[in-house]
Amino acid sequence: SIKACIFDLDGVIVDTAVYHYKAWKRLANSLGFDFTEEQNEKLKGVSRVRSLELILQWGGITKTAAEQEVLATEKNTWYVEMISHMKPDEILPGAKEFVQACRDAGIKTALGSASKNSMMILEKIGMVDLFDAIIDGNKVSKAKPDPEVFLKGAEAVGVAPADCVVFEDAIAGVEAAIAGGMKAVGIGSPEVLTEANLVISGLDKMSIEKLDEL
Ligand code: G16
Ligand code: MG
Image 1 (cartoon, rainbow, N blue to C red):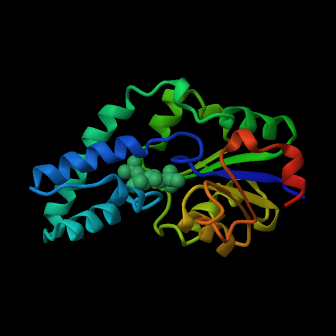
Image 2 (image 1 turned 90 degrees about the vertical axis):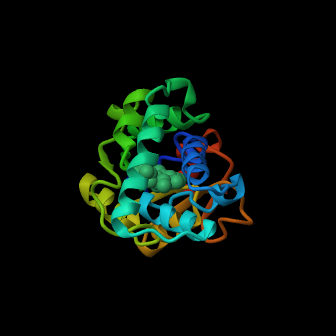
Image 3 (image 1 turned 180 degrees about the vertical axis):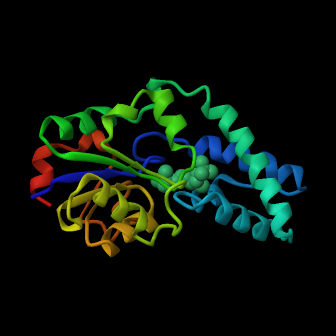
């Protein structure tokens, strides 16, 4: 039976994609090209450095590693300014309730995010104390679909991977969960998250009973 639930942050607990989009668009525009919402979709769950590489590629621009670091920092400064205004009402429907339900049922909870800003977001939305472990971009070296972030989460809460369920909105995240020997619940559309054991539109559609069916 399931002993731990590991949650991705962006797209599962909150929707920060719009803030990433605004910050990346501002950066692209400052470099003389545009950045669309369609392109932003492809950056979900992708690390900051890799996202920048892709954006520069789409813009047909080459930058040195040192220049890329400056640009990534610039984007992050704009992004952090926006998320510093986040409020608990930005928690996605049912997310806080389901994480709490897990805790009430004796199931361990962990965060498994690519973001290096996860702590700030959790503080702003008032959910820091709902996670037994927080594993994010500051603690991992290999990006999803590598299972590192989820394996570290499982280890931190002392649960075997086979007894863990990962909640993910990105294809690479679902792949990471499966690669780590865990169950995966996709948040989004079944046509996209084909490898997931179950796909739901949001955590408001999840329940402890459904965990047992996985
Ligand atoms: C999130 C977002 C990605 C973002 C990444 C890194 O991943 O989905 O778009 O690039 O974090 O964020 P930061 O620049 O804050 O370190 P996740 O894993 O929470 O879905
Ligand atoms: Mg995500």
